[in-house]
Amino acid sequence: MEAQIKHYENKLAFEMDPSDLFNALNNGEKIVVIDARKTFGFEAEHIPSAINIPHREMTAESTQHLDKAVLYVTYCDGIGCNASTRGALNMATLGFKVKELIGGIEWWKFDGYATEGTNGVKAGLKIECAC
Image (cartoon, rainbow, N blue to C red):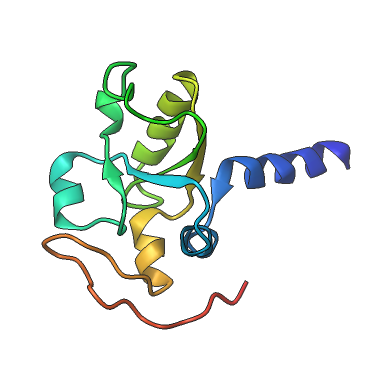
């Protein structure tokens, strides 16, 4: 039972769902959202307020301007992509507090939240998370 409890505690410590992220951003929590995909994916569509640091480009130099006192949430396309996992690993290795957005931008959109970019959904839907 203890191993199972620890497993679920770790999931919540290291992952965040779109509803949790949306609420945290709206509540003014110190969170920076990182799109860990390549730049062309970010330019096409991204979560509002996100910054783009492709996981392949995360280094001490490319992240030196970032504040280590805030929480970083990495995301990618979704469950068929591991850029958010690679990005979270890179950021943690570099000494940042980080969580991974489960489901990526696809689950963000599935929950009805707006996106920005050349293919962005400007208005998003007004729905409420059922969890």
